[in-house]
Structure formats: structure tokens, C-alpha cells
Length: 113
Length: 113
Image 1 (tube, rainbow over the protein chains, first blue to last red):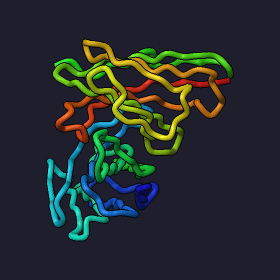
Image 2: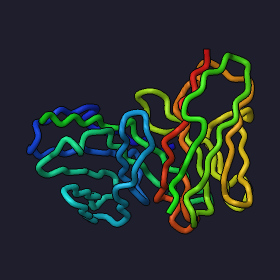
Image 3: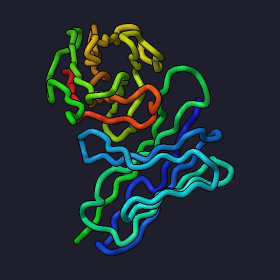
Image 4: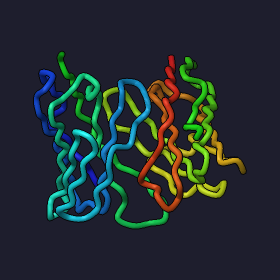
């Protein structure tokens, strides 16, 4: 079964600093999804990456999928307190009719003002 | 556009009891997935419903069952509750064609004593 490892497990940064969160898969990724979760709440979809080398940006968040499609990174530029939360990467299935996502354990981001 | 709503938000049960959790899909979505998230872990896929039928199941025992109704709302039923069932239960809706882009509800926090 596919496993996703996220690093770091937690991260504390000063407002305005840049940061990167990594997600490494045990198998080739056929779809990589980034979500954000406020503690104890639902997940909010951020971005989806499918092609090797793909890069997407939304506001100050950029996500990349490496050429080998086994690692993704999420980069936040000039962090703000509103960026605080748990960031989760999720992998789509390689086949089959049902579409379950396998998630990593998440990275807890704290942004100090 | 109405988002995904879940009820109840919090509930406490004792071991051996049964529980039903409810979810209303976002309008325009025909697929519902349920996930279990234990404290400090990423969400784990329970099952998915499409066209009122189970369309894939994760590694959960048969005492976890579900329904999807013609209006695409859904229920998750858990029988013979165990202490380890204590978790945040997340419902997510999507369009079947875009099944990796999930729209999550706020979750139902279940505590089993």
C-alpha cells in the first residue's frame, strides 16, 4: 500500500519568513493533493499536481511535484498568521474505480506575529 | 452554493453502543466519501458512495456501514462501538469526474467511553 511521509512534523516560523513542507511517497504518485486543516476542523483543498515537474501557485503558496513523481513540496512565501494550520498531502490511487486518497500525517505550522 | 454540512458536531457514546453520523453534500456533487481521523494522524479512507452504492472501501470492519440517499446526502453507521473508534469523522463530497478534489465538512467528533 502507498505511504506518504511528511516533513517536518511541525514547524514554527516568524511572520514574514518563507518555509517549505515536503511530502515523500513510497510509490509513484498519480495525483498529489495538498490540503489545509484548521485544528479539529475539515480539510480545505489547496492544489492538485499530476505531471512530473508540475508547479502550481495560489496566492503565496507554491506546490511542486518532482520529475520522478515521488516527492512534492509546498512552499509558503512571506508567511502570515492566516497560514497557520495543518498541511496534509494526499495521494490518489493508481487505478480502480473508487477514488480514495491516502494522506500523510500532516505538518503543523505555527506562524508567530 | 451550500457547502458540506455534518451532524452532530460532537457526541459521546459508550462502548458497545451504535452511532449514526449524517452528511449533506455540496450542491452539484454526486459522490460522498467518509474518512476517520484519529488525533495526530491523517484521515483514513472508510468508504465512498456513488449513485447510492458503495464504490470502494478502506480497511475498516463491516460494523462500519453507510448509505447514500437520492439527494446525495449520506449516513455513516458504526455498530458495537470500541474505544479506538474515538476520532473525528469527516465527510467529503465531490463530482465523480473530479473525485480527488474533495470538499470536506467540519467533521463529527466522536468520543467513546
